[in-house]
Image (cartoon, rainbow, N blue to C red; front, side, top):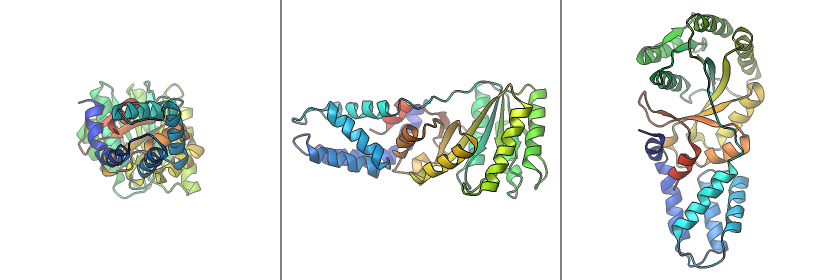
Length: 298
């Protein structure tokens, strides 16, 4: 099943909210200021940032000619084109092997679950995968990751609880190199993005990767809970400033009516969305496709 069919279901709450507003918008006879005001409210209520929503409405206004609202689909298609054009400068996410993926994020976003899904995703693509249990602080964190490794039938490197995370990363890299592993995925402890000492720990792990595996593509992905909406953007900003993010993984998109924040995040933060969790099952993770995401909103 492709991303559109799964993602469309995940976006149902956001889509229903926009659809309800469009029903009200198209009850008017002409495309005038009332139309644009209603549209602006719809975009903001779907958690696009105010400035981004205003830019979208202004650009759409330039495309439209004052007159009778004869074709709702024409307006929707114009809005889709506008949304895509506003996001076109964001970089695309690409992965090449061998790759080292360091997963970061705050507590409770579903990071370990996402790692398990990604391990399965890469394995189904025919890639070899090793997991690195560098979350050595949370009780039973390595046990959780081991369960996901077993479910995905991939290797895992771990130390005792309380070990130096960078030491675990060092051993995992040595193992991945020895086994010619395609993808090494590093689990890190969830951390408040305001704690500078914990950010320094991430930087230290990053230096180990750069030093020990310079020929691998080093990717830093932040896992975000989509139900937090615009509040997730401050997490992106802080982690990006600290370690330089390469992409975003979204979880719990099906639990929110505010999925529109994804578009303003892409346009304003310049960090691409790499993957989206689209359900609870092991295989419920997909590559992000911007066009299919926008289609899923209408």
